[in-house]
Image 1 (cartoon, one colour):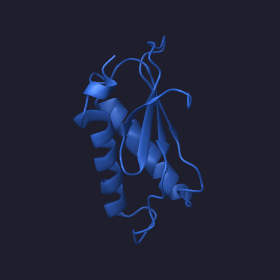
Image 2: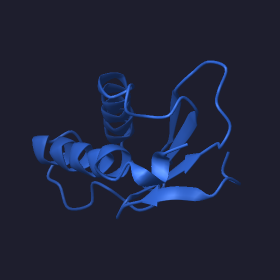
Image 3: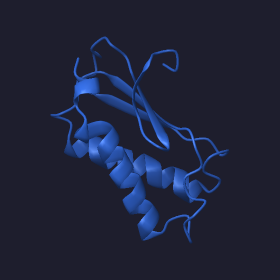
Image 4: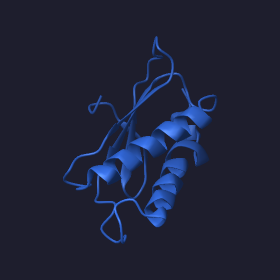
Length: 107
């Protein structure tokens, strides 16, 4: 999946997508390493935000496999690994990546 081209990119995330429709429909996975998110709380926060966005907007996304990858440290400037500001920042960035610019995601 990492060999597929990048279809969208933000400051902290990169989105990869297979170009063939999945038999299972829409599938979204996340790759968050300890290198970029030291606390398990932060890694789980990113996973949960992606799951919530995919469930809420599954009709707007193509029925294929997506891989979201964290490429830069996310919580370095936040007071807590699960702060409300971090949640909002992750949510905003994922929305920009998945929804605001649908043209890179069009099949």
